[in-house]
Image 1: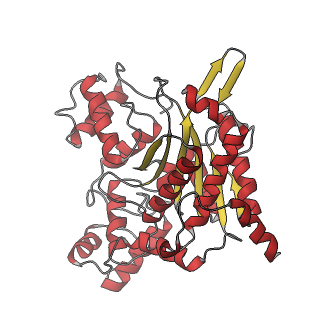
Image 2: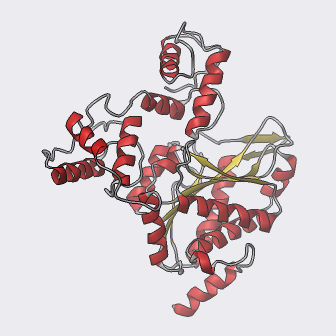
Image 3: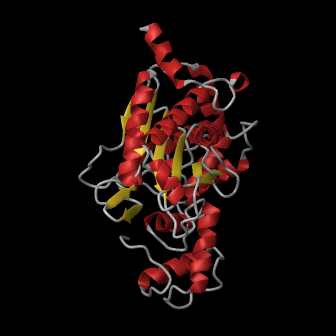
Length: 383
């Protein structure tokens, strides 16, 4: 799907969308092939429930979520396909079940990859089934028959929290991926004012470059997902895969918002989480730290933190956040964003948040109190 399907469209794709929504009981019946008001409202309800951007249109990410949502655990045999892994709500439910039983499948991303297959085979071996790594009726029956082994919180998030606790407070040697949003033929939000033209892609890259310098000076290994003038756009799927391949400890994605109402302004930060309360506790903490530091150091309107299932947040294996640093369409925010000194303050705020992320919770410091210049000085003193 290349173009977002929206209200007023007709055709087989709309029929398929309405059929899935009807199966999810968000529409009374599939009916005709018109994307009408009821369909738009059903899409919005689905997006809201899944932590997606609520715009009432079916773009690539919403379509993939709809396609995955049609599957319920037990409706098909699950197995690892190398070329095109099985994706679906049934896979995510299986992963959640395995995590609750103490099998480390990583994040429940809804993709039946090799790690999930290995954990299924391990479970099968332990209960006396043939360890083929596929989940059919016998394996599913055994999973439903046995109770939880892990208590005290969702196991994957407990592992993430323990990893950060053991890694220590120093930033030296830790690996972070900075993701400047958009790029190439995708400029993001664009504002033209006479001869002046500003794009989200350019401002996001400037912020990323400043952050790269600050974090690098503090001893972190910093990687950017793109350069200032990439040739082709990089989808979020590829950005997540790059961060995973690099073995990053953290990912921070930088964006700038836009809205048809010029009065919309402020900063918001997003972390992985679903509509039913499942959330990355470590990612949520990082989002909160980033949000509070930026608000305290810049005076921007606090649009708070939010849980989303965007692919960049869901498919990364490390805690990841996306920061929407103001609205380029707001005269108030735009005047700030085009000021290099303001962008420097934003970079300092993110650095302070990353440093606080590695402090034990009981040793955290007040928001706005870290002088990021001391991080560089501390590094110089050790080299």
